Image (cartoon, rainbow, N blue to C red; front, side, top):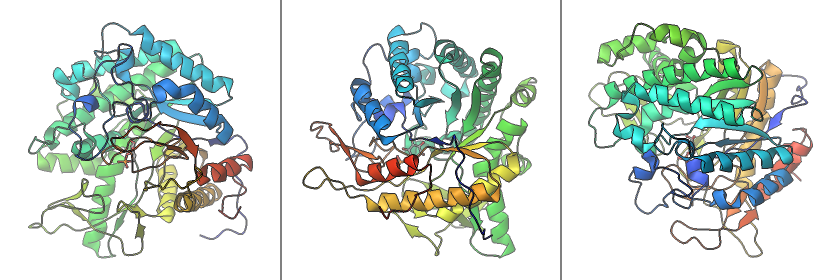
Length: 472
Ligand code: BG6
């Protein structure tokens, strides 16, 4: 749909940027922090581990000063569960509370709204040893952790995100290090995990509304609209199925408190239905998110699955898109790809925004969107990342179109604020507005250097999105 005039971005739009604790903080075992599943996972050869990451734990003041200079209105970060509860539950680690108190106070002192993700892939290893998300005790541990976060930080934090990309943990857990890659068909187990995470999330949302009536809380899945490869009805059916499996399962449960019927049918067919206690559906139905946060990088295209063919991946070789007899991922000939093989689809972003708002009628905030690339540090501390500006500008233009279409979007927080270590492709897959001077194994001086995109985004924020294109 074409518009004669575009609506402006809302006056108090939350221009943000995002990070996650384990990819950014470093200090993996300092000040009482316990190990998480990520600390124990094997990660791909040739890539940095997360022990030092960007050393934000020791440089948070300098980092926040830079984010303030960027002009951010909001900053989305995650709290490491294992800094607060080194064993997942039990004794609170006061040093962990202290760190996040300093961080939050520093943000507020700079006029930046903190947006807190409670759990971003880094489940405490002590809980994993007791069965992790297979064990219902993890639900109680999450609720207790949530209560602690609300009590300690709720006087200053207004926006809470429950679980980052629960759907990625269920669909691609072995790529990001949350599922043991040695398990042959983990899907039955993963749908049980999923059920328990949905309960944990529902309990946290309910609790948040009870103890912090002025706060807002919502889920934060990765949502990518799934296209059919053609108008062949079989392909359309496959896309509909995968939309439900990948996207709607998570949001139907969070928003409507029920399972998506197509996914339930799929789980019955495959023998993946989770075990439930009698009270579970009431728990799901008893929680209401205030908004939907979502991460968007690309759309997905699928076709009908040819039974005999193995599932295969599109782009990122670690991520398999497809399941024999259900759907089969394929590349989209209308899209370009990044250096890492990820398809780039700004219009898919508008489609996803519209679809989400039409389905759920809740305010939306984008909590990740961005381009992973090999940046080049040139003489004189210059990084000419025009490709990143181009990617972000094109996506922001689509946000504005979606707003004009009628979508209630209250924030945009791209990935990432500052360079950090990718989930499975190292530090040299960079996303930030600010460069961190280190390589995969050489920590160098870890100094921060503003990229060209820093100045571009600064101007976008200053003009409240009136100037998006890269023509400055
Ligand atoms: C999202 C995650 O899936 O994508 C982030 O929430 C992640 O943690 C981001 O870093 C980009 O993915 P990757 O694999 O390139 O780091």
